[in-house]
Every structure is written in structure tokens, then in C-alpha cells.
Length: 636
Image 1: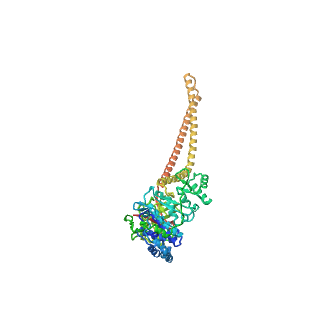
Image 2 (image 1 turned 90 degrees about the vertical axis):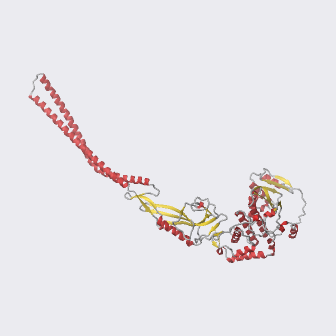
Image 3 (image 1 turned 180 degrees about the horizontal axis):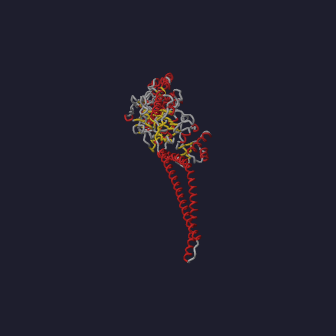
């Protein structure tokens, strides 16, 4: 029964989604709808219906699926209400097309027999077996559906197996033309490419056969490890093979391969093996064939009359039954609708901020939270402050209304978020009306009001010096700057009194110089008088000694010289006293100047130490909300 919608055994989410994608693409192809899994609303709706049922361990029938297409058990798809995303009238039209398919007698064969089961097709007990899927009597759309359904089931089965380097199963597909073309993307293409790329790791091989290599996708050809190239009908086919061989093995001698392929005779083949350094030419044995054409359905029935597959029931072994717990009443497998225009993020469990916001790094259930990024401008013209900050916070868990004070301030950026929800995500339905734009607008205003009331920055100030610290400047650095400014003020005042004292000092210095000159002159005069008196006295003494006669004039001259000497000495003492007085005046003036300078420095030093703290708050116009978004956070 190819059309079975029985829930598959336990497998990874990617495999199940691939199987759903293949089945839905083929099913839509049967009713004439070419669907893009990412853009087609028909494909998206049916895929969600099947996945939701399988996630709950529920086996579907086509009749049940048809009913759910018309009346989906979903409130939303993505961020839109189901009736907005896919109106009821259009869903009814789609359901009618499926109903016509179910009512068609030619489709009845798909719905009879045992369910499609890869394990049963490959094994009968412990005995391996070959299963042949015969397509000759089918239309192109039906062939696509069958091939897609079988190979999608095979992909799911192989991904449930342990890795193996031994061959566990082989898929042989004759006449692959149309199933994996180079440009189009029919439903069968994805499972074929998946098998070619991944199946060898699970011990599964694939052999494709075609007479039209030009109609094969390059990705399919480049993933083939072994090539058997026979005689080709056209030069284009040969060139396609050569291009693909060169792409897969760039070191091959293309001209030699060209010569070998061109020289092939009947039943001769060129064997290219990626594990061998050189290609090999081999021939097959001659075999007689009547070439009588495809088997009829009646002949197939006769040939398979003894096949135990016909006697199989639809029950599967107990160990293959799937037990998947359904979602709780407060959960949804589909993301709740989000208000239009609101950014939606998924927190990466590996983000540094995950622990800060209370995330469970291993959680598969996601809980709604609000992340806010606001731009704050602190400005004060008097203080010369114009400082910008980015304030980021997460509000989690999210209630009906946010408490702006209950914010977890974190430093996050786009690297902390995933673009899409991880596979298998379920959503805790939030109390907050996240489908309403008003909720996010109100939350943004609440956060702004809170920041306006509570957020400020502190700066240091010296009002006497009219100095304010810069944002980020330390108290020590600002104190040094105030001290330097105070010293400048002190220096200016000292310069003023220096000008005032300078004239007095110059006068006293001139007087000192004049007094010094008088001292020098008086000293020289006194010395001269003393010498003259000495000389004069010496002559008188000699006259006395030798009995000479002394004249009254001589005696008078000697007395006069002694008197002049005393007067000269007196002038010297007077000059020296005056010089001493002037020096003392200069010293006194300098002491007075030093005292004023000391007072000035002490006064301005005290001014430099008058440092206080001032706060700069926010005006409402200084707060801009860059983003208020919804973020889904992994939860236990």
C-alpha cells in the first residue's frame, strides 16, 4: 500500500521531514500541483498536518488527511492565522481535488495490500530478498509518486540503521531518465541525491542506469564511485560523460578517456572506479533475450502469486511501534502567531547569554521572551557631556504585561540567535498577547518610562573651576586635571603680584647698588686717610728719635690727617649701615612676596580639591527603541 500514512518508526527528525516532503510532493503531483516545499501553501499545510499527526504517534489515512485539509486542527501556520494563510474556500477546492483522486478507480490499487515497509521488502525473517517495484504501466505523475514514496521510505529506514562499511542493501533503478534531471526538481530528485550522498555510510548502495546521460544531474554523477560507460548514441552524451568524469576526477586524461569510449564495441564497457588509478575496459558475456516488452499487470499478479508479501497483515512488530507523547494543553507544535512586523529570534543554546536569561541548553520546548535594544543619549550642555549608550535586556518569562524593572541586562548580538527553530521544537503558549502589535508598542513605552526614571550616569564636577569629568574618566585622573587647572589660576595671580612687587624691588636694588658704591668709595677714602696718617706719623716719630726740630705746621698737619681719617671711617660706617638697611628692606619685601604666593597657592589648591558628584539623567526624547523583538528561549 504505497499511499500509507502510518507513522514511521523512531528516526531522526530530518529523515521524517524528508519522507513527509517526498510523500506530499508526490501526492500533490497526482492531482496536478507542482509544489515548492518552501513556497507552496498546499505543500506547507499538508506537511504540517502529517508532521503533527506523526509527532503524536498517530497513523493517518488519506480520508482523515482530506478532512483535515478542509478543517485543519491548527489555529495558525507561521505567524498568520490559518484562514489568512490559506482561506477556507481554497482549502475546500484542494480537498475536492483529493476527493476526486480517492474516488478514482485507478487509484484503488494504491490503497490495497500491506503497507510500504522497507524492512519487509529486504528481509523475510532472516532471509534476504529482492523486491521489484514495477512502473511500466503507470503514468509519469504516478511514477514520480511511487519512486518518491519508496525512496523516501528507504531514506528514513537507512537513517535508522547503524553505520556500516559493509553493503547492507542495494537499490537498482533502471531507466532513471526524468527522475533526477539537471535543471528541474521533481519530487524524486531529492531522495535520489540523498541516497547517492549519504547512503554508503549506512551500508546502502545505489545503481542507476540510463541511455541518456545528458539528462542526469551533475551532482548525481559526481557522487557515483563506480561508472560503467558503454557505447553512446550521440556526441553530446559522450561530452557530458567526459565533463562529469573530469569534474569528479580532475587528474584524469580526458583525451585518453575520449579515445577509449569512442573505441568501445558492442557489449564493451569502460569501468571507471574512484579507487583505481586507471580506467579498465571489459566485455560482458553474450546472453539471449527475447525482448518481449513490459509485463502486464495480470502477468505480474501471476508471477507474484506465491509471494508471502500478499499474506502479510498491516500490523508491525511491537518493537517498531512508535510511542510519541503528544503536546500538552499549554503547548503547540506550531509557533504561535506573532504580530506583523515584529522580529522573531530563536536563542542559540550555545550563546554566552543563555545561562543569564535562564535558558535550558538542552531543552526542546521554547518559551516566549522579549528582547529589547534601546539607544540612550546622556547630554548636558553645561557639563559638555554628549554620551551614547546601547542598553540591551531580555524579559523572561513573559507575562501578560512586562515589569520593566524585572529585566535581565545582557550584551547580545545577532550571533546569539538562530534564524529558524531547531527541529522538534514545541512552543509553550505565552500568556502575553504576542499576536497584538499593541503589546509590543506598550512594552516599548513601558521600558522607555522606566529608563527615563531610573537610568542616569554620574560625572565629577568642580564648579569653581567649571570643570566636569569625561565619561569613563577616573576620579584620580579628574583630580589631577583639577589640580593642574587650579595651578594655572594660581600662576596667573602670582604673575599679577609679581608685576606689583617688581617696581619696588627694582628701586630697592638700585638703592642697594648706590649704597654699595658709597661703601666702596667710603672704604677707599678711609684706607687712603689711614695710609696718609701712617706715613705722616712715621716721619714725626723719626724726627723725635733723631732730635730734629718739629715745626708747629708739621704738628698741625699730622693732627689734621688723623681727624680726616676718623671722618672717613665714620662715613664708611654710615654707608655700610645704609647698605645693610637697604638689604634688609629687600629681604623684607621678598618675604612679603613669598607669603602672598603661599597664600595664593593654598587658596587655589583648596579650590582644586572641591570635587563633587553630579548625575545626568535622560529626557524622554533621549531614548530610542532600536528593536523590541520576540525571542524563543529553550526551556525544560
